[in-house]
Length: 125
Image 1 (spheres, rainbow, N blue to C red):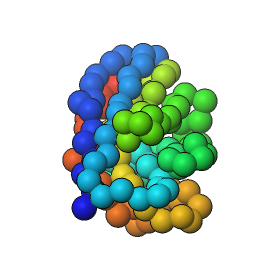
Image 2: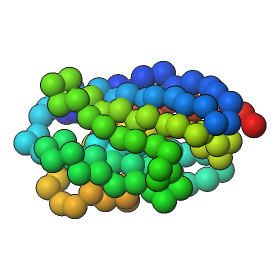
Image 3: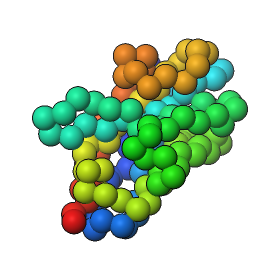
């Protein structure tokens, strides 16, 4: 099994910055994708960003391009999501997830087998 532990989220004003982290432990894979999703009240879970552990290849949702950066520290099995220029619409519970396959980075939550517990991010206007 794989355990994903996210850092505590936080709150900031619009225009501010926050950084989330997600540490993976347990079963290891030769290559996997770590992704971030978010879910606001009354809305479906949506893709934010993802990164492949082995190559560092990334993919972003259009809504966060240029504002969020995903990175990884392979030695720590940890992925980070640096969120800058935050907007109130970024308010949501953020989840990290792991896709152990070797397929292309996917934005579909159905492709991700393992999930963290979620962490709240709140951005005030």
